[in-house]
Amino acid sequence: MTNAGRAHETGVEGLRGFAALCVLYTHFLWASDLDPGYEFWRGWAIFEVSQGAVLLFFILSGYVIGLTNTRDLTPAGCRDYFRRRLLRLVPLCWLAIGLSVLVKPGDGAIPIVANLAFLQNKIPYGDWLLPILGANTNLWTLNYEALYYVAFVLVWWRPRLWPVWLAIAVAGSIVGWLLPGNWAPMVACYSLGWIFWLAGLALARCTVRAHAPVGLPWPSMLLLWVVVWQTKPLWALCNRLSLVPPDSPAWANYAFIDFLPASLVLMLAASDRRPRWTLPLCYLAAGIPILFLAWTWLRGRLEFSFQNHHLMLCILAAALWRWRPDGVKCWSRLAWVGAISYGLYVLQRPVQWFVHDASWLPRGNLASFGLRLALVLVLTFLLAWWAEKQLQPWVRRRMMPASTPR
Image (cartoon, rainbow, N blue to C red; front, side, top):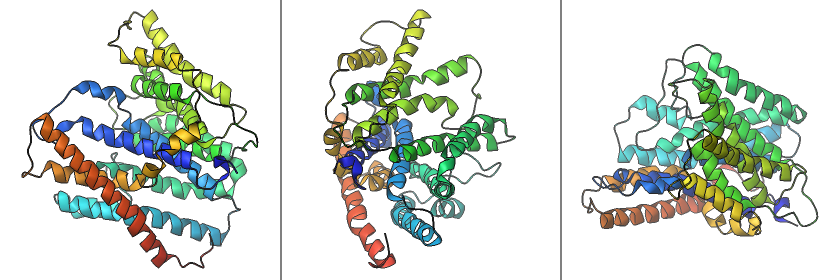
C-alpha cells in the first residue's frame, strides 16, 4: 500500500511539521520578543511565511478530515466525530491557555472564557471584540478551525454539493466586504480560510493511482511558495485597481487565493496523489510569481541584482525544476515534528514569554539571544512532546473507551 493509501501519511505529517516550524521561525525574527534590548539582522525575514503557513494548515486540516471521515453521515458517526474533534482541540488548548494566564496574568475574565470557548478573534464580532490572550496570539487560528470542523458536517451531509459549498466560500470572501460595519472583514476572512480548507478536503477525495506517481518539482515549488506569499501578486494587482478594501483589520482577503496553487502542489508531493490536473497546476503555480516579477520589471520597478531575493529565489527555482526527489520520503523526515505540531503551535508562545521575562537570564547580545532561543526550543519541544504523547492519550483513554467505534 502506498503512503497515499494510509489513513496516517508520514509525508503529510512532515509537511505539517514544516508549517509549524515556519510559524516558530517567524516568532523568533523579532528578537526583542525573546531577548529584550537585542535586535539582529532583519535579512532573515526573507524566509518569513507565517500566515501563509496558517493557510497551509487549513489545507492540511481539511485533508486529514477528508481522510478520516469517509463513511456516510449518521447520528452516531456525527457524535463520534465531534467527540474526537473536541478531544483533539480542547486538552492542549486549555493547557496552553492556563500557561498563558500564568505567564501574563493581565487578561480579564471575558478574554479567558472566550478563548476557552474558541470564540477568540483578532476581528470584532460587529462592535464586540473577544480578544486573544496577550501571551498566546497563536490561538486565534483555533477559532477558525473550530468553525470549519462544524461546517464540515454540511459537506459530509451532502458531499456532492461540494462545488456549491466552495462557490459560497468564494462568494463570501468577495461579497463579504459589502456587509455593513465590522462584520465585513470577519465574513471575508472566514470564507477565505474555508476555501483553503475545502481544497484540502477535495484533495483527500482524489483517486490514488496504483502505479508509481510522476515526480514533482516540489523543491522549486517550495521556493516559489515563499515568493508568492511575500510578493502577493494578486493582492498587488487588486490593490493597484483599488479592488481590495483599505485600512481593514482583516489578516487575509480574497486576493490571497493565488497562494493556493503552490500550496496544493506541496500537498500533492507530500501525499503522492496525482490527479489529472497535477501538471497544469504546477505550471500555474510557477507562472504566478514569475509573470508577476516580469510585469514588475516591465514597469521599471524590479532591479536585477543579488539583493533582490525574490528574483534570486525564482532563478534558483528554475535551475532546480528538473530535480524531482521523492516528496513523501523527504517530507517524512519531519514527521516527528508533525506528530507534535499542534502542541508546538499552541505552547510555544507562553514558553517564549516566560523566557523573555526571565530577568535572571543574560540579555542584550547575540550570545544571550542564542541561549534564550535554545532554551525556548528545548522547553517547547519537551512540553509539546509530553502534551501530545502523554497527556492527550491519557485524556483519550479516559473519555473514549476502547469499545468506541472508530
